[in-house]
Image (cartoon, rainbow, N blue to C red; front, side, top):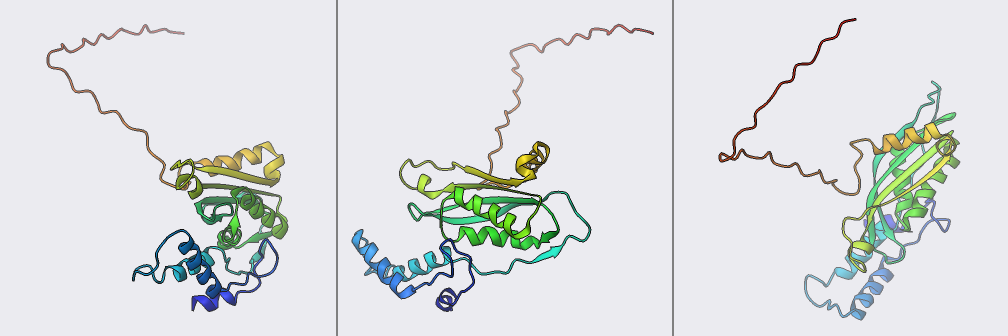
Length: 241
């Protein structure tokens, strides 16, 4: 059951240290009191279970799944960039507890060990499933990569749309925020840094939403009342050596 899964998780590297303890019953009561205080009636059939659904939804969004980082010896001495693009980011802004969603691009220059590729997505998820700000999330992923793998360089770029901007306050929809964090050669070496950002930005990297294509103008239809222009060919003089 979801309740058991949320209360029994251990070994999660959270910001406060240790594993989060989730009390869904208390969260449900608090959600019901919160909605009642905002004047939201809960006596209808469709809303009667809303506090419980709300508690379970936030518990899921704020509880990272545990995982063991799988690393392998870099036997072949691979020394070029490893980059995973468009890893999903789903987090909650700690200021308003509204979601922000987007993608992360995570790359590193291997040292003696390499990381299982699926674990790049798990690292992003681990730091995203908690009350967050995008700047900290980006730095935490980069720091984890640097501390766990000791690579020659790390680069992390996060692009996300924040519901606290689009659903409230200024009400700006479609705005994307980009943050980056770099370590090692990807910070200090200009050519390595340029290669990383070029690969992140090349066509095909998905952002937090569909990128609009520029409008193509329709070709003008000929006006029958206007004469067709006369084309004049000017001969090009030939030169010889």
